[in-house]
Image (cartoon, rainbow, N blue to C red; front, side, top):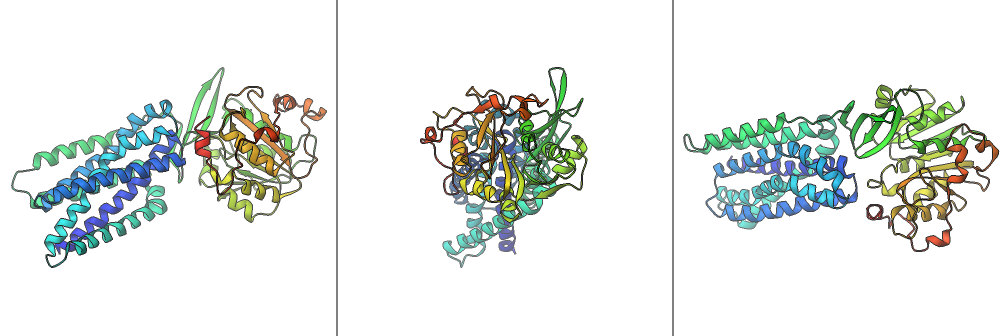
Length: 496
């Protein structure tokens, strides 16, 4: 019976480790982005903490292993897990603005997850010693094999449950609370059963008070709305700007969309060049927007013509509801929200008159598979004969430096050689800004220097000709073409 209980506990702690590891990427993402740096930092720090825990757990296991000590380890693991949430509220808002997207998640991972993961790491070698004690006929190898089998089985269950059920249903704070309370409760029960009368009560009470205090810490936020999405932290915030107020949709660290609260004017300038798709030419009847945001661009395309039909694809569910509640979006039978990956949707779709790529909002969290030559070739092949691709990219146009945007430019021009780039904030400067790429499948594309553009009442469209960033493909020789095999967008982005 003791051996079965021990294996169940090992499976439980193995599941806890993996759930905490997956949660770590979600906790860090709003401050540092969902980048390869974040994932690598969490994996490296977690494995490092576990290895230290294994080492000291082995030393502890040699000193007369007992259920009581096992209970103490679980109690400590529970308390330190509960402390992750309040510590993240104090530590990450400080680290986020002051550290790069490379160093930030590494330091944040060390500060938040080393201690709880290290304590959980002591559990397995300590359980091996107890397993050998309960089954004296088994060799050390057999005992270790049994424990690590059940631990790994629990880790598999935890990793699947976290992504498919626990995080979507509970959110980050509540899930951390459940894990911490479960570890603490099981450990406290084991201690109460096996400790000597009166001994250890003070430790349990102190730990319980600390745990309750940790759960009572609330996130300080002036947001209109804040919740964990399936993939990102979703926040709606009102920001005073000059003599008006902007309502901004944040997806993790990315200000992905926005509106003026006082009127229907576009909050972000980069959205205005989308109107190039119907300025001086027949407007698109069938469009695709990759990256939903607050449905500002889909609404704009749909309003351009009563015949315009718009597919909006995004992996984050719930954005249409948020756009309706907070951004004055009115659901329409001509605007279709599709929960899917942008690349797989393009691959399986019929050709579009317009494809708008708006999934590149950040400089630190860019989906690599949407930046490659293979993806843009897919886009090219899924445009109608007169179809247009418009992409919103962020970066510096300084092609003398090895950064993300010049590599993206070279990749785009390898597929759309007649395409043009337009700097929205400052076309002659090298600061990081929105750079719009406009290209057509056929050679005959839009002419921003034409009279139809010059006469536009929109200040961006009427000056789009002067905003062109002249790029000679020969000058991009030092930069790589991004491919499915080689697309180091995080490394290139952090150098901007």
